[in-house]
Image 1 (spheres, rainbow, N blue to C red):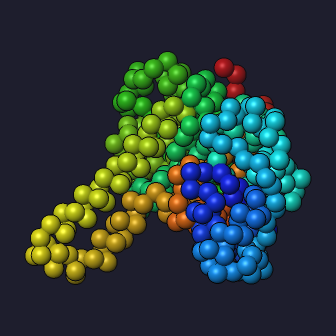
Image 2 (cartoon, rainbow, N blue to C red):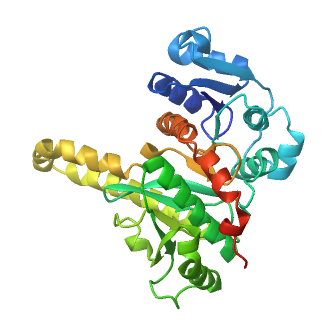
Image 3 (tube, one colour):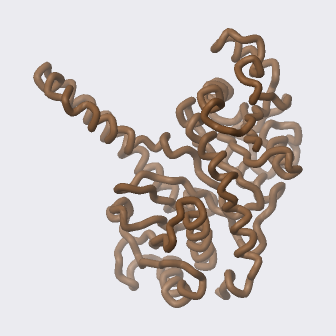
Length: 346
C-alpha cells in the first residue's frame, strides 16, 4: 500500500510534513511518498535528522519531485487547471492512476475539494462530497459531516451525508447501526431553518429504506454524549462547530494546566492524579484524531488541517492507512450504485 503526501501544502510545510512522516513511517505498513521539491525536502532531512536523503531514514520512503506549489491565496479552480505540476495536482493524478492508495494534503482547502471532485470524480449517486473529521466523544468517536466542503446545501445533500456516514462507520468501526443525528437548535421537529426542517422530514420518512439509523435532531451540547455516532449539517454550520470545539479544547487544556501550577501545593497535589490528567488531555486533543476524510469521491482523500504540526501529520498518516485498508470508498461505490435505493427525490 502507498500513502501519497503533499509535502508542500499547509502553513508549516514542508517541515511539519517531513517530521510527521518520519514519526509515522515505522508505525504503518505502507510506503510513504512525499510529493514536492526533492532538493528542499532532502535539505530539510539533513537539517533535522543528519541524513543525506529521505530514503536513508527508511527504505519505505521516496520522493516524487515537483517544483510548483498551490498557495493558500490561489483561486481553487484556476490553480487546479493551471498548476498542473504542483504537488497537489500531481498527488491527485498519481492517486487517479493507481500509483497510490490514499492522498493527504494540508494545502488550500478550496483547491483540494475542487481537485478531488474534478480530477478524482464523484461517486455515482452522490451529488456533493463532504469533509468528515472524527472528534472525541464520551467513550467513543464522533463523526462531523459536513465540516466545510459545502456552505450551501439542499436536503438531498444532508440525506446523502447521513448515508455516507452510516456506510463508513459500519465498515470501519463495525458499528452495526450508527446513530445519526441532525445538528439543530432544538430537538423538536419544528425547530431550525427550512433546510433542517425539510431534511428532518425526509430522514424521518425515508431513513429505514435508506438504511439510516436516524435518531432525530441533536443540539450541540448533546453531540458528545456518547449516544451519537455522527452529526449531519451543512458545511458552514459544521465548520463553525468544528473550530469552536477545537478552540474549547485548547481553552480547557490551557486553563487546567495553569490552575494546577498556580501554587506549590496544587502542583504537589497534582502528582498522584497526573496519569488521569494526561489521559483527559489526550482525549481533548483533536490532533490525535487525524485529518478530515473527504467522503464521496472515488478514491481516498484526506484534508489535514492547514496549520497541521508534526503531531497531526503523524496521526493523519496512520489514519490514512486505516482509511485505505478498510475499503470504505469501495463500499460506498457499491452501495450508491443503486441510485433508486440511495438517491431520493427532492
